[in-house]
Image (cartoon, rainbow, N blue to C red; front, side, top):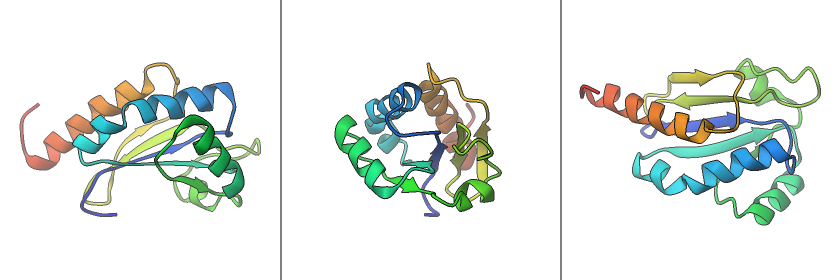
Length: 130
């Protein structure tokens, strides 16, 4: 996926209030994410079938990865101790390096926070001053 920034967000569980609100916030900001050239990917320990239903129920047009064994979470250092992925978001720059990490995410306002940081990451990559 090099060449484009990626917003990779880990969330605990499909169809829970906080996870639904977070996914819908990202969905609502998807056109701005696309304008910034970013790809959005959600990851949880839920199954493919659960993700399919969650995406259908909430009009989510971005990929949701089923990380049933927690392999992806482990690679990013995201805890799955409780049987759910911890809520953490990463912005991966177009160069493939992690540019920003948002640990202990608060759902309210998080999508806006990610958009602001994505603007900064893109500006830094282009050499422009903020």
